[in-house]
Image (cartoon, rainbow, N blue to C red; front, side):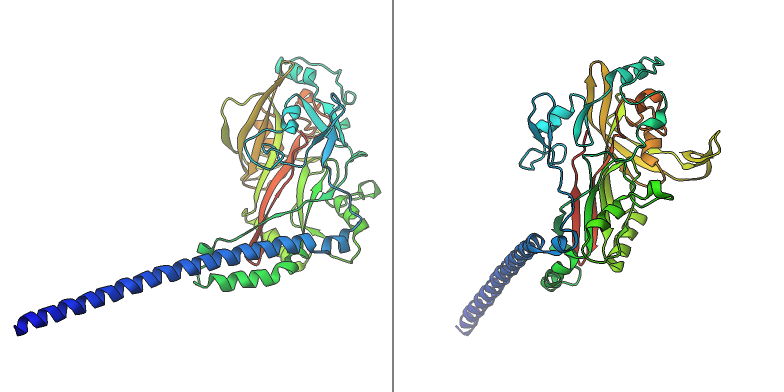
Length: 400
């Protein structure tokens, strides 16, 4: 009888303990869900505060109130109606990927935007290149290839600011187990970040920094400083060739400039370029690994070249976006991803594999250089870390 009572008491005790454990596990599960939900809500609120700060921040108006407006549309010379160009290639008007826009469709018919107007690609020149015909009668310029692709930016095209898309580090990436504290620190610093970085679009034909001599005084920096209403130290964190258009970033404080510049130096900044190249590559993607150095020309000038003196490693990844054909002339739109940063790397690499960039007056065959009124190379996307746990992605639609 005593044994039976003890056994019953033990069973009851075990049930209570089991029930208590289950209740504790349930409470722990609920607590974790509440904490997770709170973190998500806090992260959402933080992002909303960041968006409001970006929207309401007056630093752009205070520093660059008279800066040129962004180019958002261009006149279609066929329909005489405007086409929107403020979304990246491959996005529709609502920003969704995978749906081609009117801009995409029109540009695939053989046009390049230059100087604020649409200009047709010289398909006859490309056909001569395809057929190995030596022809000196081209649409753009005379017989000297230096006439095109190296001129100053023409009227109707200027720099303008680009809005960044802000993302936050994932909560799972926080190592100290106190993610909420980290996000609060970021949130308190949001207004300061907007005062320390500037993203702009550089047009083709404009130097990033002033060159030697009065004829090279006009540059992106000089134009930005003309409209800056506050004395700032304006230093680019990287550079684009004069003939290349697209995204440039400036650090507006010494710390931010150093932080972003290091990302370009150690190759952690993610850069994407759009280019039009002659011909149709046989494969859809590839990697080019060819060293780049300097080589003396017959005129006595030192020029970037494949190999050459003091050649350094140079690698470029590429991917086909579209294979296009207009009036029998074949050309392609590519995405280029430079994995190193050598001088004129993208031009040299594409020419080396037989698909020179249209409008390249330095390295492309004459017929390819003459096919367009500008170099068809555009810095279209950039992703960098701007500090305080925040990264920024900037996109710019290619003008071809």
